[in-house]
Length: 253
Image (cartoon, rainbow, N blue to C red; front, side, top):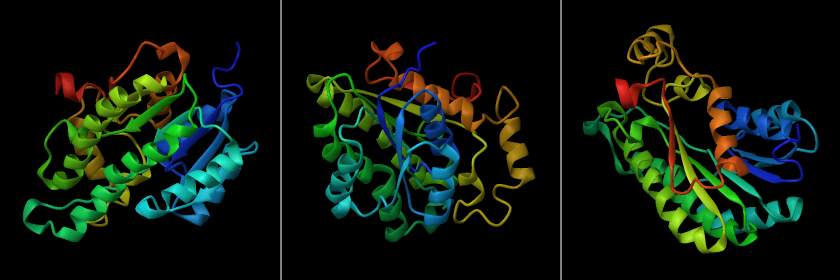
C-alpha cells in the first residue's frame, strides 16, 4: 500500500509531546517529511529523535506573534512548500470565573487562538493547491466546564476559526477542518496550571473516565489517525468540518 503522505511536507505545532508527537510520528510513518515546533528544547530534541528520519525541529514559543513571519521563512527554507499544517499547539489552565485575570486571559488567547490565526495567515502563501490544514480544538469548547472557562472559550473560538478559514482559503484550494478531542491520555492534563499536583492523577482521570460513555480515555494514536484522515486525499470532500474524538461524550453523555 502506497504511503498516503509520500513526498509531502508536514508541519506539526506542539509536536514535541502528546497528540502532536503521536501525529508527527504517524505522518512520518506514512512517508511525510515532518517538521515539528515546540517550546521545550529537551523534549523537542527527544521528539525529533523518536520521529526519526530527517525531521526538522524548531524551538519556538507560539505566543511570539511578532516572530511568526521569521518562523515561516525558516520553515520554508528547510522544507520548501508546506503541504499539511496540523495546528496543535495549545495550553490549558484550571481557573474558576472569580480567579481569572487579564494575564491568564491574554496568555490562553495568544497561544490557543491568536497564534493559529496568524500562523495560517503567514504560511498559506507557501501551501499549494490541494494542501490541508487541521486545527486542534477541544471538547471544552463544546461542553461547558466552569473550571476551564477561558480555555473553553478559546477552543470554541478555534472551532469557529476553522470554519472561517475553510471559507477564506477555499479559493486557494486549501482545505481546512478541525479535530475536537475529549478525554485523551496526554501529558497536558497533568501539567495544567491551577489544577494542583493531582489534577492529572488517578482519581481525577477515573472520574473523567466515568463520564465517558466508552469508560476509557482515548489514546494519542487514535486522535492522530483522525488528523491524518482529514489531511489526506481520502477526506478530499470534507471542508469546514469537525471530527469529535471523545468516546461519545458530546453525543451520548
